[in-house]
Amino acid sequence: GTFLRGVLMIGKERYSGGRHLRDSEEVEPPSVGLAKTLERFGFPLGRLKTGTPPRLDGTTIDWDACAIQPSEDPAVPFSHLRQFSGEQPPLVDAGTLINCYKSCTNEETHKLVMDYAHLLPEYDGKDGKGNGPRYCPSIYKKVERFPERTGHNSFLEPEGLSTNIVYPNGMSGPYPEDIQLKIMRTMVGLEKVEIIRPGYDVEYDFVNPQCLTHCLETKTIGGLYLAGQICGTTGYEEAAAQGVIAGANAGRAAAAASRGEAAAPFMLGRDEAYIGVLIDDLVTRGTNEPYRMFTSRAEYRISLRADNADLRLTQKGVDAGLVTDLERIAALEAREGMIEDRIDELRKFRLHVTKWAARGGNDLMGGASAHDPKKQHEVKSAEEVLGMPHVTLSAVESIVRDVQTEQQKAATDIMSGQADGDIETEEFSIMDPSPPSIYDTVEASVKYKSYVRRQHKDMASWRKAQGARIPPDVVYDHGALPTLSSEELEKLNLVRPATFADASQISGITPQSLVYLYHHVQARNKKRDRDKMQSISIAGK
Image 1 (cartoon, rainbow, N blue to C red):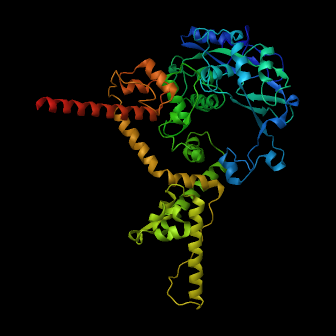
Image 2: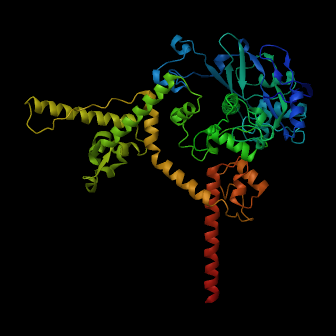
Image 3: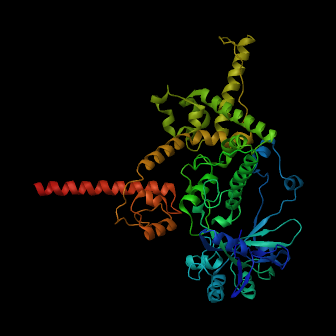
């Protein structure tokens, strides 16, 4: 966490600590001895900072003046096991969900933020400015970076069922307590708010994660694993994800050692999980600011979806001895079978394009061209139709069900003698709607199939091109490279990489941006060669 030689700051006041206790004025002491021990063993240390906003008294907030942000109802559980069994969280069943609310800063807020900036702390890192998270900045950093903005949202989040404490998300700023109160009271609904505990910043040591293996074991000391903010990431999900891998490997190594054996490392690849992307980025590139995980950092993000997390990872957990819950394993096997069966059913059901359009409308088949006489004999499967833009799984299943019902009725009429005709002696099944437990995965698997193939092709060509040189006069700005983020352009301008392999080692440069840069340089080189040939041709004349 934030404990390695941690220093807490409110205004110009500095005092040792890792954090304030949740429901107390007391401070948890920092880990100074551990930091010195790591330093003594030669671990490369740096300084990062983060902050937390003031905690507000919910009884002093004018909730009616704020915009309500209701909870999801019904809620979608994170756990596929709970999704599969159709469970809802207890508060949903009891009807006692808590709502969040939204307030917003304004120009008066921003004036105070800048007028009192001289009272902010002076940090150890980054020449006194502090090295904080780029993507969850303090209110001061927001106002400084985006002077054109007249407001920033703040979500007011109750901290629990049995407390009045409210967390104003997005409002960290370690001003003196009286200034924090002035700033908060400029916002809608908070005109009479009281602060229960002021916000503060914490600056702490971290270990350069390039000294770790992909198992998160240190290269310097065997059997020592690091995970969390100590590795240079932000907290919450990034820290917890590392804990899963470091804990799994430490436990497996200890268990194997007790048997006189060596444990096989448990690792996740960049193509298997966001955890794999996170750890690979950290141990190969390092970081110079608190690392945050984004989908854009992954080359294979179309395949790394929330809906298929269990399909990608549960079996790996089973193989490593980490997943032993028989109910979870059975649920995975059942879900896999249901998904495969439904996609197979969609693949086998075929209908003329004109009939698809007649039943689902022109939009289903891409417009009026579906009625083109040339397409009268064209047949498409339900899977192919679902792969088209703006077509939903429920719409396709509804058409399949209608056709199957009509076919079943026709067969029944023939068999009972109410209609003439021949019929094969086969059983007609009617397609039921996909249950919520497989709906998203079936739809995404079909829709993204061609994109996944293209993604793998792009990345294969990119890997072959990593040794290619980048011309030194490439201009890194939004005019030349409109899809790159400001962060990426800033870092490319700073480093000026000589090759694409060098560029790929810069923390924060996403794989897709590298592919875009590669295509940009290729197009630029081709234009240069054309211009050169044209000049030679003109000179020859």
